[in-house]
Amino acid sequence: MVVVVTWTRVHHRVAQFWHTLTAPWHNVDEAYAARYLAPAELALFRRMPRAEQLHGIALAQALAARGWADDDLLKAALLHDVGKTVVRPRLWERVAVVLAEWLFPRHAARWAQGEARVWRRGFVIRAQHAAWGAELLAAAGASPRVVALVRAHHDPAGADAALVALQALDDGQPSPLEGGPQGSRPPQPGRGS
Image 1 (cartoon, rainbow, N blue to C red):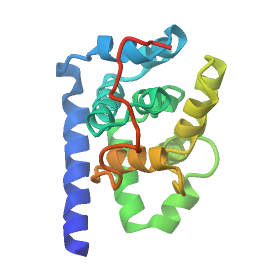
Image 2 (cartoon, rainbow, N blue to C red):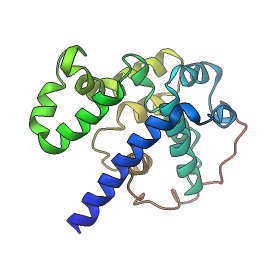
Image 3 (tube, rainbow, N blue to C red):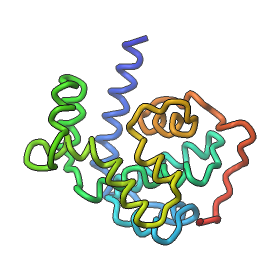
Image 4 (cartoon, helix red, strand yellow):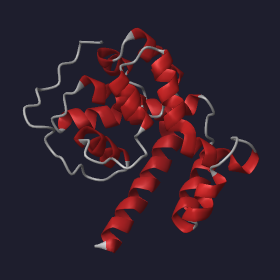
């Protein structure tokens, strides 16, 4: 079982690297994002690097395909990495952080403290982008639920089923909560609130 999980994680990380590397050649379905995001939220989405926009759309679509119709959850999926607009990670920093978190997790956590400068930059971005994103969204008038989901998207999920699903899919794992919550209505794009 451990080997399967490890290879799943390796596959996920290689796919992430490839998608980030090839993002400039892919079109962003901004109309999909606009169906869910209010104007101020959409403005933040437009500031995100193309790779983060594509990732956010893919995550929101994966949640919707599994029956999640919670507008706040889908907004959080689209914008969960918006904090990376505060300090944009470079591709080599992403690779270094992923490898360090895997090989030296205690050191990586220590390196994530302080300011996003020099060689610690990628580690600090990884550790702080959720909080930065939550602050941007709060300032843009996003709902408290969207702000909370974005702030917590790298924290232990606890009992919040929506956060568990967001984290699992963001981390490349199958969602433990297939089909969404009981009584979930089908996605209703076009609401833009």
